[in-house]
Length: 292
Image 1 (cartoon, rainbow, N blue to C red):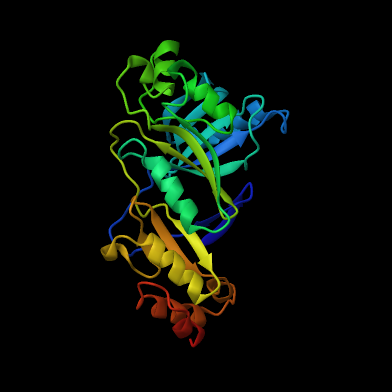
Image 2: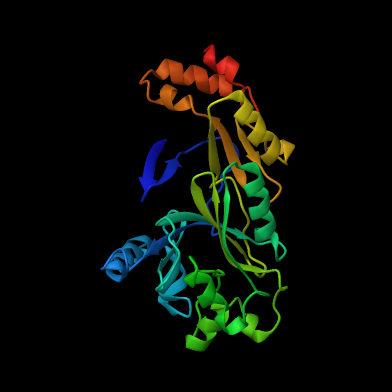
């Protein structure tokens, strides 16, 4: 297990032998903003990062100029983790450099429903920008979305030319099908102190949320654990050791903050006793852990 920060975004990397193997997929990606107003060499930095991530990986959307960004690309690195990199256009709303992006591949409007639900669960949350297909003209939809703080984008095949890329960047809406007016082309929201991106996939994809990437909620009290567990856990068979799955398929870890002290204690016996106690639980109960 390793704890790190990506431009301030906390990330916990772990390996486990429990359950069947799962692999990350583009349903959850890291959304990385390079703002030329703040970083004069934003394009050069983006290109360097792209080169590192693409080495041994797979390009999902080629690095290029699009209607909504001077430079944008979506890549899956050699470990299967997805990254969206883009330079912000002038006037973009301030957002963190790195945000987690959730791509909902169910019915159009799911991203908005999920965003409203998550904001109701986490105190102090905030609705950010949202662009639906109904809100903007198809020709301007993607560029308007990003100019307010992000870049709506569907994962798709590499386009053959500029027109094909622009059509795909608009979610193929220019072709006329293609989704209801409630489709969320881009949205962002703050849950507690953390910003997220949420988008509708717009069409069928060969992937969905899984346990390879989960969202962790650290709790100081049993009351907090009970609140988040009751709100988020919607799949009883997925409940194990503080892990649960919500009604949209996203996996969460509702974890006690005291585990930091245990892991940092340097006492292997203490860590093992806590792990053994956790393995007996579905929802975390703090009292037995404090007695270990």
